Image (cartoon, rainbow, N blue to C red; front, side, top):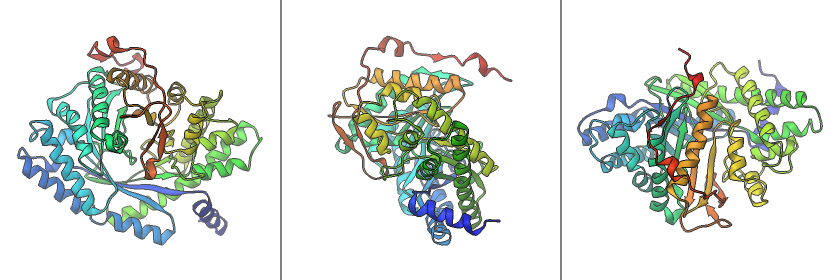
Length: 454
């Protein structure tokens, strides 16, 4: 039973501390849409999405009114399109037609993003997967709501360096295609190692082939709630600190569970997972960086940052797992730069560098996220950064990702403006010493020895 004090506490989290359900994401399988006829395939995809998701946005708004809990985004994820388009698509432009169909369907049902313009190539690339990857710049430039992801590595298979090399150039091409908007297209492209099948957060969401025909996944976020809780134990020891984070994460996750179950009941679609992620926004008080500062750092990036983030991430996961039997997705602390005012401040102060962010990704929930870099960065340098981050995920058996934005026409010291939840970002310096000979070797970096567990 929920007592009156708990109701008041939850209301305070919502009104004063930026607690929200960041997204209800409806996963939809498109496997039954496959056709060798491109026109028929596009029609099947449009019909399936607009039928299954027709009540998603209305349901989200109904839950907001019923429980007083903000549901910020309503989103859709679909089966990786490289699979769905394999029979019908003969060139990159054929895949672009599917991207436009996804965008049109998303607009029809009223969601803000649709994810799954994706390819899973951790061990090798089929011809259709290569075509989809080559189509990404045009697809993201020509759509508003479509998000793309490519999984290039895993602990079980190693890292596909041919895909990593290709994607270095694809990131640059995407930046060029959207240069009039500070290369915004790159904000909708994520490169993964160990991508989960049930991630509700964009831009990396896709509907894994292990999932049901349709599923409801919910992502909850509450950095402000955690920061406020920690203010009450300022100066206490690490045991007290961890217990406070765990208890707070438990409460946040219960809110997500409530919303997920209600959405599942109304839509008559099975509940999948709650993703408890401390996902920041540019709003004041909604910052993971401020949590790290409350733990005791002057700025993120100061000595002790990786340890503090490890403590935070682990405590969040422990609290969340106790609150729901189905915690999944990414669950933990996100450290995007452009979406977190505290991270932006740390970069401007000279405390937070790309190399320190990479070290932090060893213990966070995702990776190098929403980082703006100079537009003249070489493709091989971007590939090298991707490879480093994929190696962290592969060796540590965790999900890592890269969302770099080489902003065309801008250099270190300039600022890129993305707007909305994506915020803005100072252009960060990149190590420009060459890794070209490394990237050009080709082939696959083998899986680590501890991957052999059969």
